[in-house]
Length: 227
Image (cartoon, rainbow, N blue to C red):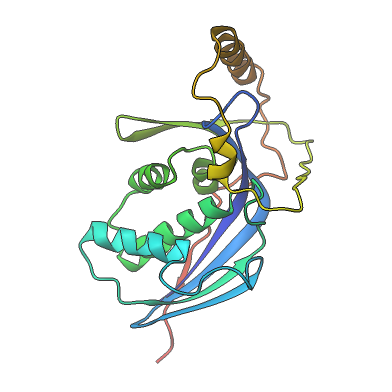
């Protein structure tokens, strides 16, 4: 049984939506996997020279986590990754690997986890939903984790927008970027942010942008090998 998963890049922290608003973009990583008794990883494209090809790979770590949750042993997988999303550039490369690993494992396990459970697991593992929610659901998404359940709202946006990603020539890990943020903000800043977030939701147009993942971003196919 082969499984192919396609996960889009994402842009998060949209405007006033820090840690809760993100959008899926038309730039995709591919994950092609076959269950096996050993571990083999082929990496094409971005990260081919730097990403690990062992159990420390984020995709594999997420697969193992799902097997543990299901109470099943993880024996291995033959995986081919085709990466187009830049790494450590603010476009959700880790969210793509996380979502891809969770979905692949869930398919191999005969889908014991619902979509809502998978999204919750992804958000809990990532720590915030602004990348994993649009990577999982597609389009523009407002999401938050409340008492172990993820509440999300799809946000319609204009269909005549074009997105341009400007990334630095050096990598910037998420934890490094978040490390410079203050622990507290002034009341006036908090009010300003809430007001503008409310305005964003109120005036959001009613069309899905053509350059975002308008449909569900995860396309899965299963084929059984000929014998």
